Image (cartoon, rainbow over all chains, first blue to last red; front, side, top):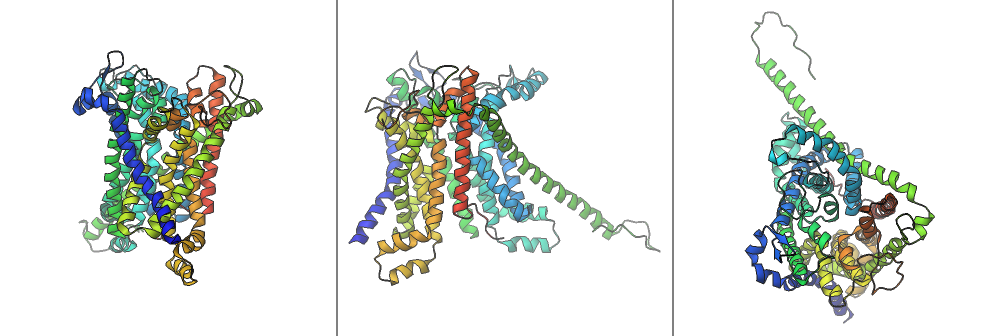
Length: 300
Length: 302
């Protein structure tokens, strides 16, 4: 009998997770139902205007901000992260690799708000006066690169995001590469291939799915990241027009406006935004886990 | 390896196959060296922000780390400290841990030891999804269940939102550690005539204790840096709140966030000092967690 009681107790702990997941989704849906009723699913998602005064709520500026910053961050994080994962799994001596991996994993542990503080106080003015002012003065006619350089903008937020999610790609990517049996490599090295050729022709194709999964997992993190982005993106409720324009992601919009929301309609719309973010990260997270899981089982 | 081409008497000046292979291999070795170099550079580049950030936090935070900062509540633009935030974090994070650790460990035990493979897979999947859920979404959720009905931001809501974030992390780490405990240990307990629950709690759990504590520690580190969910639930407060869990409460992360945007250099300096405090705690917690379990990050054999 105590066996049964213990099983039930432990089972309750496990079930709580599934319960929480469903409860969060349902609760957000119920609390934002007014917004969905008023604007409709499509109307809310593609609505370009968020105007509290006019009681018009469209999520597109924030969805665009989320996708653009996360996408730009991936452009930086994927090549860097994959290269570093290759180095740490294939090239680095083991005694060097272990401390480096620990250091990189520690980056992932730094609280978002601390990175945000650094981004806001240190990085923002530096980028404004260097990269951003150079680029804007070099290409004055390219709308995508138009100034004035503000520092707090899409560019800075994307860079910060890249810093934050690269460790995910490195750590997971390295695990995926290490899971590949050594004889795959040995066979090719035995044919006279260099280590890089082995990596490029044997290792990378074999672990493609797992690496992709690691990158998509990082993408999910980038989309949901809140504080560091909130503090560096400029917080303008519009669809960004260029790299140095200010914007807002879904998460940063919620963080900046939720507490100050002045009406039930605004709170409901912000909760609807939360639901959109949840669905987006759920989809991305499920895809990522299927890819990582498949590559692990396929190899192991 | 390259030995150069020795002139061989009686052979024409036509390029030979061997030479072609050799120059070809020189290019191949060049590519190899270049890619190795690139991968080293990428690794170093990733570490640059870490070094820069830690350096800035120490340089900007240390000068403000004095008794006034540690022992007084905020007063005005140039006076006061972060006692409200320190005291708040010291209450909310341990309370959330007390709530999340038993639930998470029990959940992990269930998945690893009791559940059938399908249930285990389902719970693992749900936990993975929960781990990936943006913490701001958790904050919004707890706001609707605990702030709206009671018409006040409260430390309780903050504690619950932190616990919700910690539980799936602990479930997953507990489960993975218990999976590493050899079956012989389990069977040893059962062979002594222990009922299953005693075998699990007395034998299996003890074998995996270090790893489980590591998981809890990492969850604590993560929770102590969480900002967005606390902004939406515990809100933050300029008052030192001890034990009044039904009222708003400050925390180090929310203190950093609110102070970072202030015009007063003193308040921004305090944000740096708070960041230093938080960073030291989080990094120490991570290092301790790794030491407890000996080695956490995957090494594997190759």
